[in-house]
Length: 496
Image 1 (cartoon, rainbow, N blue to C red):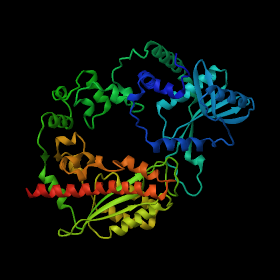
Image 2: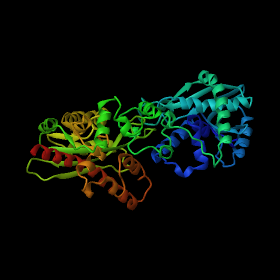
Image 3: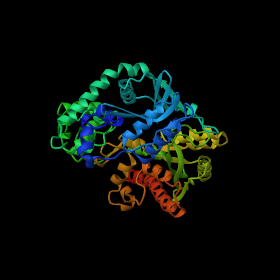
Image 4: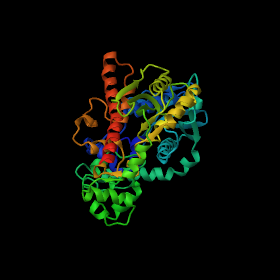
């Protein structure tokens, strides 16, 4: 029997029983994937939501769960009231309810999520709580999921009633109760059957990726051959699992299959060590489209579940930094300009845009890497600041996407391993240039680290901030230098 099966453990067990076994017996094999900023977003959402129904009494967390349960029992006698983190236990099944509306004739459950929609695992979560409370003979009148309204735009004071959606899922939860009881029994039987020295042998499955990518993927997939079906880029996980379950796993096996030519191309290049494929016509087309001055630009952004700035939505990509390499004409040397917002600047988005407009004053080509990103950010800023819209639209109209020849595989190398990411392309084009190695950077190595690092500046001393800010500048500068190096490579190819 698992002691105090919590709602989080229950949801893990619903995804895959082995997660609980690994948590208990081999936690050192876990690879944490949750980013600090994501966890902080979740915490902030949870705290804000507590006030949705009015004045509330909070049950403070205690490692001794019985203390939380006893506090809850006392508060339950004082109905009607609102209790947050109300804690209950039935037959070793424990849960803390995010918001409990404790009425004279029963209770209402409110489970808070920091996402912008409802998923099945959230239904499993609140169903487990409903099960525990009803087994304790409480009359649960309503079960609701509370989640983020992605269309809310903040102006002035935060309106939490506009920020959150509340959806009544009582009927769905009630129809799910038999599954809850069966899941609890199955989880307990599983953990009683497999002890520390009896590791369960469970094949890889859809549960490795849904509802969340499992933290034990590296451990559970360790016996797969080098170059296997899960390394194929752009192939849906369900298709990968179909091959895996048919024992078609290695690149050698996959090369004999009738499949999408894009997948076969990746396999062929890596398996047979093929030379680069270069469509000079495609390279010439993109190079002929360029007009001096050339502006190579890249943005860094962060997201907040709870919008802090006027005119922004939940989870909007907020640009706080850019790097810009400039080549004025064929005879000019490369110049570099950059912008990095101050963490306490409430108008940093406008200052970002104004600085960029100043740094890109002329007609010319604005070179980016992934046309779905930078134009979308500038359109969002144009919505926020209509007086800047014309200049921002000018910059958008000048954009040329260097991702395209790699995405279309008009330029492809085995070292890309199926990807068109600049993190794969750059080291493949310049394998011996240590100055272009993202792994060698001092602080920040990818976009997620960049956003987390920027947000971490809050509350730090100026000295600490300067070290981190320098790391951000060095990282973003490499992203646009990478595009300059790609441009140079394109020139070399056309000159051959």
